Length: 434
Picture 1 (cartoon, rainbow, N blue to C red):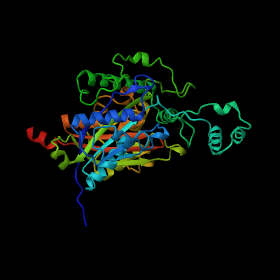
Picture 2 (spheres, rainbow, N blue to C red):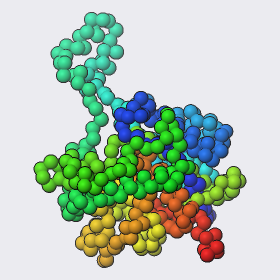
Picture 3 (tube, rainbow, N blue to C red):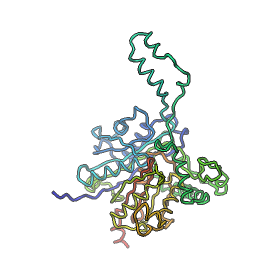
Picture 4 (cartoon, rainbow, N blue to C red):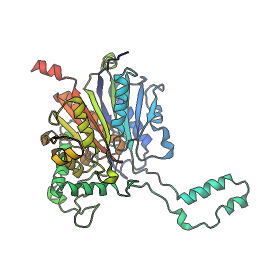
């Protein structure tokens, strides 16, 4: 039996303000923030008491208590309690990957509606005890007598009490994401000045987005906070050039705190549905999610930890027949300015495209004026799992207001990349009006 795939509508999204870690959300949890973002979405789209077929998402930095984060967040909202919550994690691609899973179920007719959501906090990072102490405590709990419990601690060392914070290194290489990105910057010869310029432009665009009122319906107040606290309206390009590098201090380094994303707390959510479900609730369709791709590379052997999106986009273009230049908006997640610039340079490089992407010709360059037109992660911040939903909601609004087609590219830890194409739902209407 042949089944016709349905169109997948992106109806829009919201997020709570993103805040630098250990500032305004220092005492809040992933559950608090995810619930806040979902309730903001409920309010925006009048979903009080409404059953949603799937809420999918998660967080990257989690406690053991967060094993069912999405479902627990749903139960704290005004959505119908019959709404399932499905928790997943794909590093920085989490909420975009959640949207793609929802989209597949909508397209195939399995469900009618879904919410992709992500939350992250490094202010509330899990701090665990040493493995040796954990084993002692487990053994102690199994003993019946006080003396047997005491014997468990024979040979105890005070060093066992040292807490073990979450590791920021890739398990396969022992290098942090910033260190990996430094290697990419050196491989692709990305100058420090270009990185600082991209960071500068991200802040300026984000400040303008707030100043013009563009962000008014994309950000909902939460915990007494009304806007992101990382954006620097008065950013100075000359001052950026004076900052010290943070990941490579040998003199070759180019990545600084300013041209990298800060550790950030926050949450975001996006609403997807079938065309019929949207019409039944009177919600305008902002954009169609038309194609998507996830890819991975062999970063352990030196392919570049954050370069997998180049592969995802290449495969996406192959399947859809589009050229890299066939887009009106490019939303490339700014994990680091160097990552964005390395991605763009890789697509322009004949050798990289031949060796890694299997292309006879390079994908070519893009019109930089169409890149991250409202700013991106360097300015807004990057609560890991929330970034995909933030970008999707922003692109949906851009397409609804201006028409056209947009490309999303998100790099993730573990050498993975997630890409998607969205197209304006108003294209035909706008063409007729023209």
